[in-house]
Length: 314
Image (cartoon, rainbow, N blue to C red):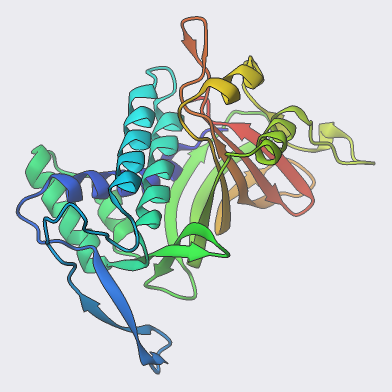
């Protein structure tokens, strides 16, 4: 499936994170949040007091409960993922890299990036890189009210708040497709308060679930596959040497759950127009078969009764 402009938001987030770590002209924008006793204003927004973090250089400094060993682990994991990115699949590996950055940003603690923060980072990135970002990026960012990092049910997460609570964040795509039953990928939408939750695949039980996810084929009883879009769109090498990879990799794979993010697609199936919600995603960076790379970003999307597995082979 052609993803086209749908990858823009993750790439935008990568830009923001890179620029925030490089810029000396922008003051620290990651700030501790303290919820006041009045937890909601009349319009429903959280009332917070933003307190800048300490700039102490003490080696014993702990930020949001993390010590130096934690930061070394974070830096090492992000570095390893960056080094594992391939030339064959820049889109998929870019999405994988972004997810790791978001996951480890959430580990820092509970804090919020506002629209002003994000906009300032875009300007800073242009200044640092000497490149002008396209208008679509600014149009997308203008729809983001805040990004809230923290934990949900004990797992690291980011919640995306939209300026327009009713309509969310719209990313126009309008790409006509010649891929069988998919006629046009119309747009992607991120609903207000959409959530992305991260879980490390670091136990025998979680690795077993990952292997089952990659090997089991999706079917729909009593409905012919000729009436549906392809349900299993995984790269031919996706199962290659998986056991050894999981035992030997130094990069912890991620299981990612999303709520409130979908792609609107016009099809020639009995369902006509379909909203495919992103459900479960896995990242498996650095996999190889000989000299060739294997896609690192795999996801399951769902529309009505139809589940589809896709590896991002771009």
